[in-house]
Amino acid sequence: MPSNNSVFDVCTVARDIVLIIGSLPRCGKFSQNTTTSGASARSGTQPIRLTAYTNSCSGCIRAYLGGVALEIIMSVTQLRTRGAVSPAPRVTAETLLQKKLANQPITAITAYDYPTARLLDEAGIDLVLVGDSLGMVVLGYENTLPVTLDEILHHTRAVARGLRHSFLVADMPYGSYHSSLDDAMRNALRFIKEAGAQAVKIEGGAQRAELVKQLTAAEIPVVAHIGLTPQSVHSMGGYRVQGKSLAAIDRLTADARALEDAGAVAIVLEGIPRELATIITSQSGIPTIGIGAGPDCDGQILVFHDLFNLTFSPAAKFTRQYADGAAFFAEALAQYRDDVAAHRFPSDEESYHLPREVQTALASAQPRVRKA
Image 1 (cartoon, one colour):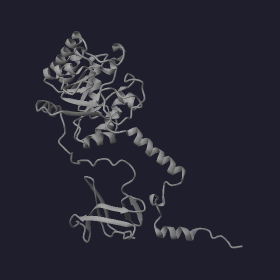
Image 2 (cartoon, one colour; image 1 turned 180 degrees about the vertical axis):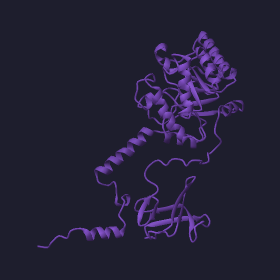
Image 3 (cartoon, one colour; image 1 turned 90 degrees about the vertical axis):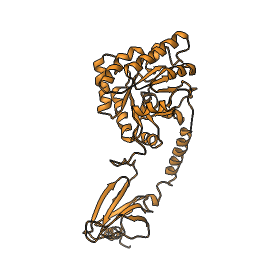
Image 4 (tube, helix red, strand yellow; image 1 turned 60 degrees about the horizontal axis):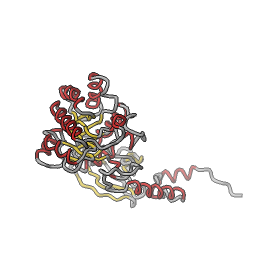
């Protein structure tokens, strides 16, 4: 083991850990794969970049200081290092517009937590929405109406920490923009200032145009949402496809024009006939993002849980299941339950151990049992 006066510094650069050490413990249970990063400023030491330095007993990276084991990587989600390079430039409202003009489809998915946001961001998804759908798929509410402002702010903060590339939009929940323009402005500002959103999404047609105009004037980008608007579930008489009559078509096309003229940066079209979505998309100068609106919108969005069969309910017609997450998790949980019940988890290799000298000292300090 190294002596107590061993030189030991830890610096974090991106995701690598640089250890500048005076001596490194050698043990048959350790495997080391290092690259030298140059001479240290301290005399007689060499910085070693540990890309793989593992202890087969614990499965974690381990270093030592004065005989004390320091566990560098534990069994928790590893946060991104500050200043880490994004996989691609940050998507903005202008990026989405340029994709529309270039006829490049926009990809969008919902997220409600940090690990999901990381997955979407690293997959190159253009737009991530913290939707009020979290009330149904995460919080267990019957619909989106009970979701509070504080609940969505909480989840938006978590998602924002996981994004470096995707454009982050947050739903303004029911009741947060309905009473007055002042209240709506104050609440929208919280999403930008406190939660890290790049835009807010509000539901409703031409009646929201003045609100969109005021928010835009306050440098708050707005994504509009027309068609089947879940916050209007009671006034619509349930979740029904909208825009199926000539009068409804006229109303929705007028809604889209009014919201664009008011300054919306994009518009979600939900639960409307493909033909109507095609008309609105062709007439619109801003991107349209479809959900249950056919393939001719400028982009598509789905709820994350719908993609992976995690809704515990029959799938809607417009969704597509890309993997069976429910079956995957059910099988893994059953295996974990059985392993614990049968004393197969954890194993000795998955356990931490005292250093040999401490084990020896502890054994010699134990009271000896007298022989009869």
